[in-house]
Length: 432
Image (cartoon, rainbow, N blue to C red; front, side, top):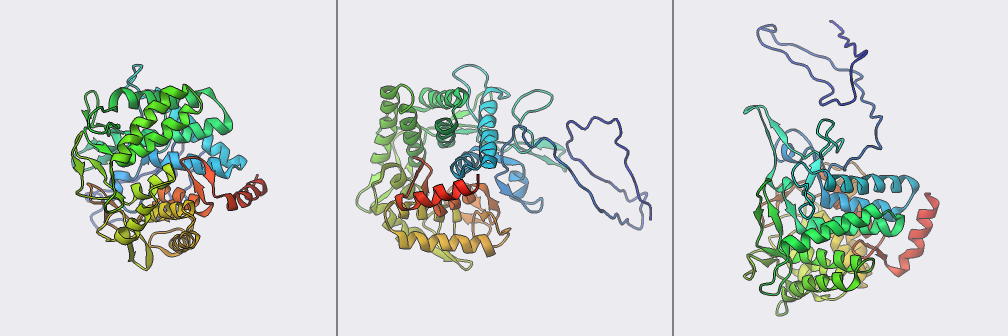
């Protein structure tokens, strides 16, 4: 048995893509080959470099893992920033700053959108170092197809959706309020101005359209409007109005709120998902999250929780919780945590405690868990009624919402349940 060594002396290791690999061919190994691997280590010395968190802990290189393996969704990272900021230890604040700085850098260093008024964020970025060492641009995710020998990018990941931008605004404004830094405020303003300029709609109850879909230089303008997005925009613009140009941003927040109010279906006490175009209501599929988020944002529409219980509550794979929509084909743990937060705001502590305990059980024993994070769904292929599914993969977004549920925290407004505030503050002081 031969023990190979690789001499890396004097080699430039400042930018390594694929730190180790080996290859064999049938001509030189007609009887096959056995290759033993032992004690391979990578020591990452630049942990403070700009980067985002990978959204999912993937498994083998199969579907859907190949498409999300190196993807850092900005929605998930905005939630993580808020969670780090709220916990507030020195280590957590360092992590929050890296994420906040990464958002600022990504906005200013897009590979295409450079002009003032055109700058926006993509829905996702590449894992690892955010900065491309050759171009200086923010790296976008993708995957190599070995059969076609081509690099591919996912259409959604390179697109820009309004709700995701609004969540980044909320996260950056939260960071600015606690830690200061004009660059975070200015980035939030830039995102808000882009939303206003490119997606404001004046037809049929107003609101803001979904964003842009596809690749530069001419992505397709989205005409549908989402209740979810407009809830996010309302909060983001309201928070901004408390810091800068109050009347200006309050008007824009009201424009988003008017659309949300128009999507309330009083007869059955729930929200429609939004509109298919500027005007036609989308009644084909009703998601859970907007029922809980509306209560978090407006502290009303409480009856939507009853609708969610009756139409999205489910039991699957040994867990009780909530599905993404009404087909009840699996437990969506992110949405279950969102409902727990909504129950806290609605002073339904018993229900909140029940679902927080279910989340703890999922953390401990769900398929593909590591005992720390929360998986996205109780099994692979949990449907949404839209063009994506959730899988049993550890998920940054679901984990962040679980943290919010545990500490009884509303990430929209940065508020805690009054009875838990003293516990949270004590915990933060003990961990500084």
